[in-house]
Length: 123
Image (cartoon, rainbow, N blue to C red; front, side, top):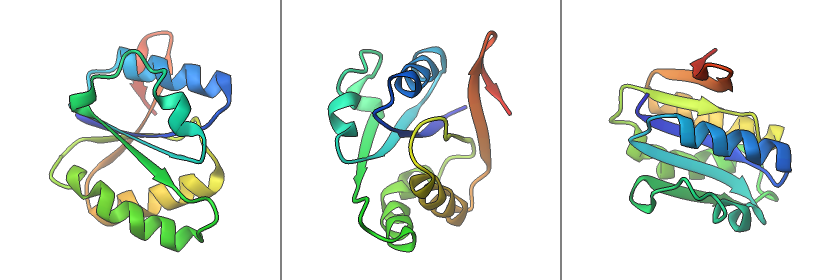
């Protein structure tokens, strides 16, 4: 996998899952997307290399189509990649809908990934 797009929330169990996904995968680029106070949590991720990391803060009051449109322009950097992995373990349904819409509009192959006992796996 090359580029990981992952949603993030404030839920400690979900944050732990995301941290493990980041540390056990081999990512060329990591794009994390969240609402509100998740930016404070993102800075606790010790496994992040700032050169490979991008955080997108979304406004939770915006409708899904507007969030998706905003994300589309932000995610355009992933459009040149052939392998885009996505994880929705963390975050809200509203954010998941917007991210999925934006990623599908990029026209890239999308793989859903998660963590298992064997490490990062495609589901």
